[in-house]
Image: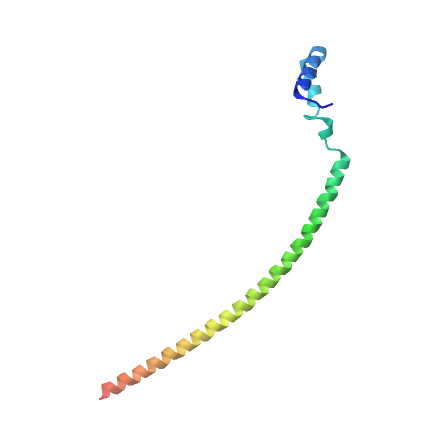
Length: 116
């Protein structure tokens, strides 16, 4: 038999008549807001606990896999970073040598022309 709101109200009115309003309120506060079939038992909570533990164990495995992938990506970034730094160092060195060579050549040309 399902407990409906009209049935709960009728019970409350009868309790008020028999026990008084304060006692009726106290007793009604101890009843579940829905039927007893909707109240969780200790067994329900234990099954839920086992289910949640299983899900967390699965998530621990997945996080471990993600950590491995992040470590691999980090290693690849370190390699790329080292290669990029090496490339930039060579480019700066080459650019500096070319600039010094051009300036030296221009200095020689200007000095030669000014002596003429």
